[in-house]
Image (cartoon, rainbow, N blue to C red; front, side, top):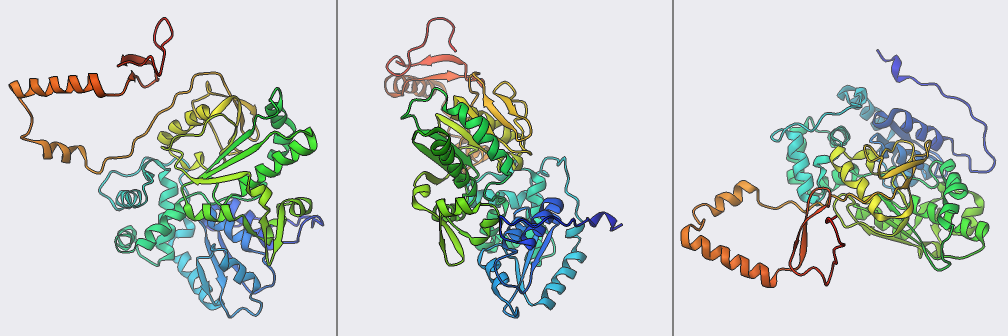
Amino acid sequence: PYTTLFRSLHLGRRSTAVPHVPIDAFLTSLAEDRQDQAVGVVLSGTGSDGTRGLRAVKGVGGITFAQDETAAQASMPRTAIQSGCVDFVLPPAGIAAELSRLSQSGYLEHVADENPAEPPPDGDEFAAIIRLLSHATGVDFRHYKPSTLRRRIERRIVTRKLSNQAAYLACLRSDAQEVQALYEESLIQVTSFFRDPEAFEVLQTAIFPRLLAGRPADAPFRFWVPGCATGEEVYSLAISVLEFREEKVGTAPPIKLFGTDISEKSLVKARAGVFADNIAADVSPQRLRRFFTKTDGSYQVNKKLRDLCLFARQDVTKAPPFSQLDFISCRNVLIYLGPVLQKRVVPIFHYALKPTGFLLLGTSGAIGSFTDLFEIVNRKHKIFARTAKPSRLAFAFAPERQSRAEVVEADRGREPTGAALEIQREADRVVLARYAPAGVVVDEDLQVVQFRGHTGTCLEPAPGTPT
């Protein structure tokens, strides 16, 4: 029954162009293959090899270990611990004991549901955990993919050494720090510099030239990376467009990149632009010299590059979108959202882009049923061009603190009748006619069904049928 757990290791040719970091390569491959069933362990050793690999393991929901002060060579485990990607810091015997406990818990034998059902109805522990998490953070997790959330909850149960969801729910209710830990682990953390290098080559050779065609010299390039995590994707795009602008074009249109995320912790790291020296495995020596400053054990993005990038907290599922963008890279968000949120977000991307804009979703992304809003440009890397179709935005409003039943109960017995009702209606009519802002009533397709008030100073309707 365990034969399916085994995989083959293939010897690859060592590259002379990048640092030799075999542990990072192995653990990253393990994370890609086993996803949330992966376990990474970094023991005694020199350098920082293994940290990037542990980040990949934890990013997909796996479990990570590092040796404590018993390590004869502490550099490798210490670097991993300082990166914040280690779940357990133990001596080797303690790591062995935890691995035994993990195997007995059944966590590692879990097989993810590729077609998850909707979350169970309210009343069970899972639904209660999601309600608590949403209320505490202001992020509505009800329409995130339930299979992903269940695994992240199971992971926290295992790392906290609890028995089940009921015990974990009690833990959440008494420990605000655990709520924050679950929140951070429920967010997207899988990121790296120049992830999928071939996609960046396509951007420089096929997409950026189309964005430049016919552009006025002073018209800025505007890019947006929703779900930017710690910023590697944003800085990678900045480097790519700078290289294209300066080396391939010879002109200097302004550049502005926006990175947004709902994790303020990740955004703090993104703004600082400080990364471990193992990014040398993903960033060429030429780019390191040109765009980074070497410090003790790390690289910092230089000020010129940081000044092009603006990082801000934003929930893409409900916050007002950017507009007049040339390019959106969203390789980290849609795959974690359920159908309800995907149908809300894809039209937002269409609205945010210029008519000549492009959307990058990456190999695992999809636009679902919105084939009228985007047309495929590169099938392998899921790069889409915006169509000229009208945008179909679905605006979301923050949930009320009181339920409808509570409001009805509170108002019971105070409903006006007879003459009092007529007075209220007349008062409402006078107030709305004189003081309410002008507006339009629209249906779910944003088609105008009624103009209200004097809209001419703001919005002059075209002759013919309202649209």
